[in-house]
Image (cartoon, rainbow, N blue to C red; front, side, top):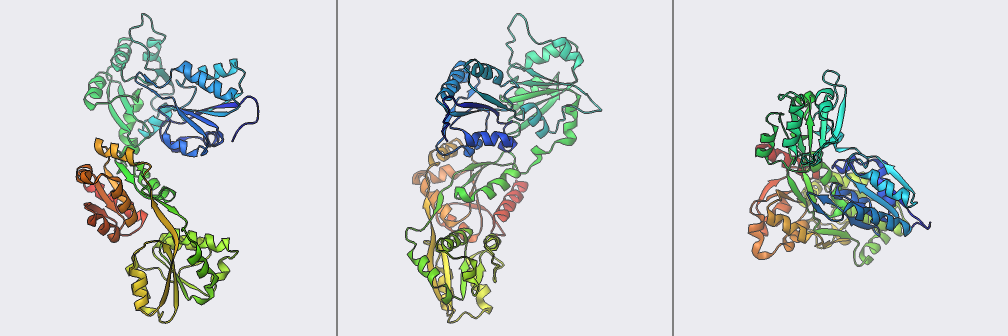
Length: 511
């Protein structure tokens, strides 16, 4: 990580308008390379996941008069870190050179003799307008657009803004950081010749799950924004192109927009659920209650691998079981050829899909994705007297080995991995629950339920969860939740991540 040069390098990186997926490839590379990441209020915290584990991460956000560090202090900080030989990534919301004060920071670096690069980002004007369904230019409406600061002090004796030119000479006007000064902006535009019936849109938290857009005219927008409670950060768009939003809006039609959903799945497995919920418009709060780890003792699994020639079947009950089994197989100097004589069964399509990545097709995939269904699938398959290997989590349910044993199989249940409780995000979770800002909690296994339950103060569980919807991946998980006092409102019909998301979306359509 450390730069061997006497003086480091600074990357002034545009983080984009809010949606972390809108950062550039170059921007991600700069975060990954950094010894120090200095980030703003409007830069998505999700981008910090790209930073190296040993990188220093420093927040210097500024919002509504609450400045963690003044601009002069930020300038001095990045110069100091670079002079210490560090690679510094200065992560700024939007684009560094569009009202991002990137020019000032670049001047300071140049004066200090520090090498730097500018990495452009998607500015809020482009990102927020696109997500609101408002094209800034359109051949039938206007061919020019202007970006203007809305933060200019309205009490100044003179303005640097040419209001006459803006009001009558530019088709689309985009004001940054202008909600507080909206009455002054409206008065100046109308006074200098802009028709009072000109369409206006105000977009708050553009491109994020919290996006909210209101539209009106210059004559009515101040009252509309006040009644809607729209506050900073917000973008103001003035011009006839705003009328296209009625037909072109797309983002705010997503079924889960504005819903804040807790994902309790282990972080290394949560990406698929997070991605699907986010695509449906939800804001995901990752609060993993478990982490997956290797077994404390590999001996039982190692012994099973050494005697694979004795087994007729291997039953995989999860993606984790597949991954840890094959990783250990590889560690022992073996590969899939060692399983040439073995038949396999998988619980669920995700497990079967993961098995295929190792070169094996499942001989049995039950219709329903739980242990009881595996037992039913074996009902027509003679396994009496055969040895069955069951590599899975420690303390898993006993239904499967008991039933297969009852059918005459010799079952060897071995621990391939363990799950441990994680409490890292407990305080943040509790604060959000107390504030009533959580809409839903998702459970993808009984272990996530149990560990989530342990995170909550026992005497406050009912009050904290009173307004929170509980969504479960299937009946076993649901029963565990009910046993612990949770009211399960949503249960997937297909016991998979896509099935869980589908159930959540369908429920939202009924609310």
